[in-house]
Length: 367
Image (cartoon, rainbow, N blue to C red; front, side, top):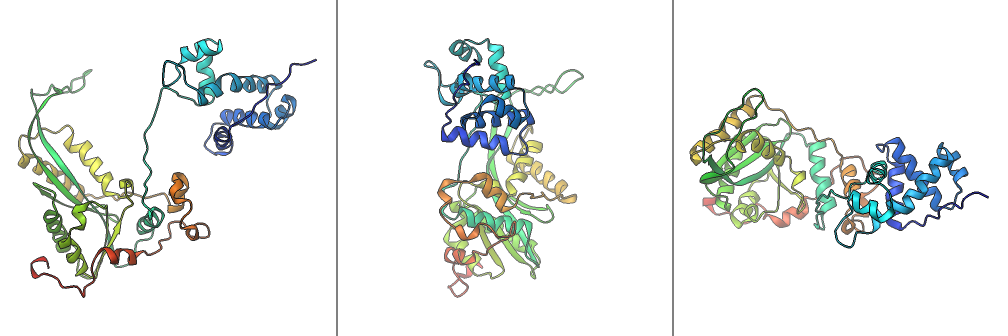
């Protein structure tokens, strides 16, 4: 009489994760097969039946069935008494296997208990609407209009290393001291043209509402008067002061699109800021804010001489399917299904409540 197959009773979370591994197109073939073995075992199927259905040897089915019950479940659902996560050796002691065996089992199921990542989901009640609106601007921009991604990179430090750097040599990377001397800060306001990749940028010593208003005027001077301006920006208080509300409300061709809270990733200008930091600021030596501003200006001039736009590839449906924030699943049901990828549903009415109409009184010093 053969051995009795190990019973598998999956939790709801385990079942979801295994079903995802088994059905996802990018999952490695071996990993998908092992996930299907465990799922079929949880349904009560015998090893011989499972081996036929997943095209694997009965011994292979029995091995991964036992290993899931003995090791994988412990890894997923428990922690050792003296630590926050399992290590190879602590798990090996717990189940009586060699650490090398645990390593193979974890590798087979793509488990890495020693690693962790952080995430943050937006709690914005209009998250779905705003994502569709902004992604729609990227994928299907309106005619006779510019889509400008606007934000500020504040408190950029002018830093000088405490000792001269040691330059790169054959077989030796560049070396610099870890400590530095500060020589002041400045703020860069930037507007990225989503269609062309060109950037309008201005540096200011501070980042208050008056500096942002000055930057909006700079944008207006650089945009042909016959084009509408669709402004993508976040909900920072500097962007919503009363003078700015009135200034924008006095200009019918300006349209504001706010990003969801805690969702700066949807604003393409953040990618520009990351490139600027990597290529010019992080390893730069600036002994004054004037030197720092000159370096930023040189970077902008070089970029605008040969601009390359960022290519937005994900539709709103793709993004929302990947994020799936629980707080948004019960709302905006009419926006799901049957809509074109990236289609933009206007939500201008909501922003009309944010900014006054042209009928409001506008102070002469703001126009």
